[in-house]
Length: 81
Image (cartoon, rainbow, N blue to C red):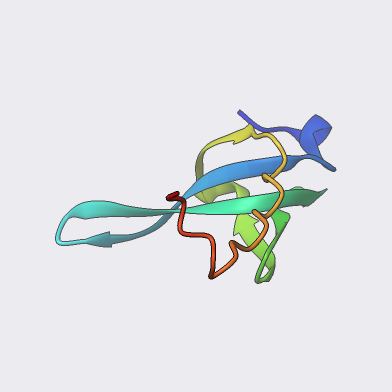
């Protein structure tokens, strides 16, 4: 499980969102953990900061940095000879 020592690292956080038809709905947040508060954490994702209440966290862990983007393929490169 995540803790204050994970601030500054890339993480994935699974959080409870709602109950739908008597079943729990979860979502994942991926990004850099930038704040660990008493009631909530903040993860900066590609779309911006996301605040997650601590009591909604179901699981979480550190993950490796994202892979660098692939270079674009040339339109003339078909891969055949």
